[in-house]
Amino acid sequence: MIFEQIIIGGGAAGLFAGAHSACKTLILEKRSTPGNKLLIAGQGRCNFTHVGRISDFFIHYGDNANFIKHALKKFTNNDVIEYFASRGLEITEDKNGKLFPQSGKSSDILQILVNQCKKNSHHFQLNEPVNNITFSKGLFHVNSVKQQYLSKKLIIATGGMSYPATGSSGDGYTFAKAFGHQIVPPKPSLTPVFVKNYAFQELAGNSLKDCEVSLYRDNKKSRNHSGDIGFTHKGLSGPGIIDFSRFIQANDVLKLNVCGISMEEFNQRFLEAVKDNGKSTIQIFLKQFDLPKSLIQLLLAQINVEPAEKIGNINKELRKKVIDQFCELPFEVERIGGFNIAMATTGGVSIDEVSPKTMESKLQPGLFFAGEVLDIDGDTGGYNLQAAFSMGYVAAIS
Ligand SMILES: Cc1cc2nc3c(=O)[nH]c(=O)nc-3n(C[C@H](O)[C@H](O)[C@H](O)COP(=O)(O)OP(=O)(O)OC[C@H]3O[C@@H](n4cnc5c(N)ncnc54)[C@H](O)[C@@H]3O)c2cc1C
Image (cartoon, rainbow, N blue to C red; front, top):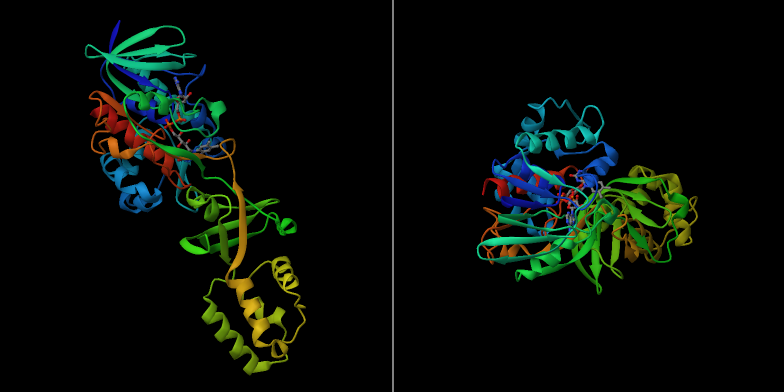
């Protein structure tokens, strides 16, 4: 039997493409049920997109944001909201603008997509991992563990490599390579950071609001980022670290500005405070930064300063140490969390050889890509599912 279209992967992107395809389509899914990653998204609540203007989404896709702009504009967050709402989904927004099903169940989203694919009379083959694909005589030959299927068009929507138990373990890269596509080495992203000689275990559970973090590689500052940062038992986490993790690697140094002001301003405020009342203590001076008491105590202990030390007694050399500690607190990265705990993959099928307007391969006509299999990854906040839906839509209509 020859299908008009085969979609490999019944995840967010593959199902959304199926839901927007009218032609005779076969969806091949490795696992016994589709959408396993979708089901665990947002801790089972599925943060499926974000509020705001679509142009505000662009900064949430790292260095490859340009590629995804077209798809995002073609099927925006408002289109996604309208799509699910018109199919009966009640939607709730959290205080940060993340959108979830009101029911708190990812399965509501999955059900809508599967129902629409069935309504479109698509054929599902579950428990059917694809092994390889060839192209001859105008047709794609898709070989699964069970049999061969033929199609005129093919969408590869096999996802990235994170949480491989959900079915996405990087198979799409092998398929793409067979057609000459370059693969940007995949790396875990949206993942916490493990720190060498970590001395902040006792602070686990504490977090810093909107903290600036600078990334140093080979003693050179390469990037910075801001967001809420949490201390864990073995390192750093929270959106400020997780969203930044796509750029971080072992042996990098992360410097946290825990006080939220520049070194110059810290110095100035300190000198003014000494002028005002040199008998006041360092602990009182540091109160203005609204930091956890345990963090202040630990940071001072690390540079051998007593919390009750009078600020007037702190000489220039020690003041410099205090400023470094509160404005550029260093953490040397041992490693970032692996694919077993990362929520996304950075890297994948290179975007250079895929048209952003159609999601079609520039190397093989009729071959399309959608979702995380491509070298596109978003921040936390619903940006990855929005990307998967937008790309799935564009691949389908193209
Ligand atoms: C724990 C966790 C929480 C997350 N929470 C959120 C969130 O709240 N909001 C958000 O926006 N993003 C979230 N994400 C990210 C988001 O889920 C993914 O970016 C998104 O699912 C990617 O969609 P996809 O269709 O490209 O890939 P996937 O959803 O991974 O789907 C790929 C599908 O392809 C199938 N497949 C793979 N290889 C083959 C093969 N050889 N043959 C047949 N089928 C194959 C897989 O079994 C899988 O079903 C989360 C991710 C994780 C891991």
